Length: 260
Length: 282
Image 1 (cartoon, each protein chain N blue to C red):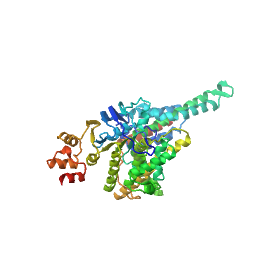
Image 2: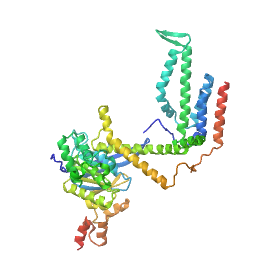
Image 3: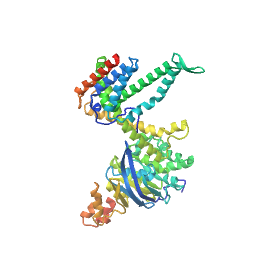
């Protein structure tokens, strides 16, 4: 099953090996900086950086396209809105519609900026496993612990939730098959009938999930899990030279974009 | 077929060159390869094989929940292109592994009624099916019909799930590891039910790696290993071949068969139950 969330492309590229914290910081910095300059030259610099990342990542470009596809409507809408409502001298008019060069320019700029943003964001999720991403975010959120935000617990919840997505998908498929063997029909008929047909699927799914959650909680307690305690890690996050190089490169890109 | 919902006469199954592979992230993982066999109407057959040998996949292919990549399942002479093939498929009852996890209704009777209702049977016929099915699995309607499924014991829940399939009046019953995770009393109660169904002429395919239960209940066996059928037909304990094929594939020889062999008696004629063994030895 291919979903847009948490898509990870397994490969062994330089980007895959980087510390998730460095990647989160780098991509966040780029995404923010992207919106601070409104020139095509700066956009070209960021676009070049994103393209370099894409080539470094060993991820087939089609995977980036998959991330862009859901945004097509947003892009189209932005483009049309800018095209139609931007001020300036019209070079083409049709009734109330006026196309201006300025509008065309702004539309192209905003669209390209969105594309660069999505590619940069995809670089992070495509080269980082959801678990590593959670670990990285948990580390970066550590200052919030002073405000009594249970960051460790939230990160663990995220990790467990991610871990159980494939399990639940298998569970859903099994229950659906079992109920079809008893004559259940899913996705047929009107809305009410469809909703009613979900009962034989959802009730067992909830029962199984709650039972499993209960067992997991007990098993974790049996293995001495206690909330509120900072745990050590089997694979501690270690920033290496590569990670600092990445951050330096990103800083360089941002500086370059602000002078061009 | 009687409206009272007695177990109907068996259904012959012929598998021809069945093959199936799961699609796992773009990779084809074969689960069943070129499997061919036939099960006579009303026969009781054990489907043996170690974990991951393709037993569950084969059962789902027989019921038509999975579509084979190659080959076909002929049900009572009907081939997949026949008009009445769907009706034949609905006469195959499949009890999934740990089927009690699929209970969902508020009362035992309601859960059992789900199948017959989905088949569009009239209410009085459904009521008769439910009563009959509950009776068959040893959960008499008078004391169990109004109970909440999750208030029953583990063994009772499993038999209730079985009743849900029996209420559809299958002519062939496919059971996927029905004894797993039941306590001894639960196993015994279920074995009694299966014996009764067999006695009433229902065909049974029992997928399990519990060879003792299989030996007690089944007249023939199919042995699957790595998705391939490595043995079919009668148990073949007259010579060493039947025992060898089991041991070679992470299975055991049934206790009573092994006992007979060690006693120097003909293992092929080993008794099916402890009672029969005691009688023979007395």
